[in-house]
Length: 172
Image 1: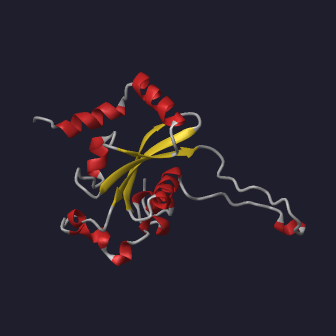
Image 2: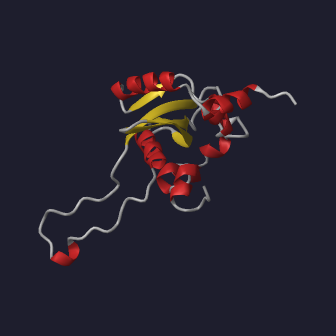
């Protein structure tokens, strides 16, 4: 059976070119935390998550610092019983990246996101954002559900895939 383009793109991302990815990450580290990009780096993944190359779809690369989700110990006056912090942040890095993108682009809704790389200091994600006010989005039957009022701010309520995973509503 003949295999299509997206199959080979998916296979290529299973073993990416280390040198090229390393050079890209060096550039990404020097750039801003949230950068609007022209095209998705992982086209197969973006298309699988609902991206279409039309007006109203925006791809944003987000850089998230790796490391401690541990909450800091309070340093102001409290009785000793209240000085302990046993809880850690339960949100995963991907959900944090989606929320940061949504905060930067307030008129857009987060559709989904995927990881494009990580190094010793940062995770890099591409977040797919949709402009619900565009007529191209309103007229598209597969994505016009995002224009409904009830889907406003869905990333902050944990309704994206990463948010559901972080809340324990998905197996993987």
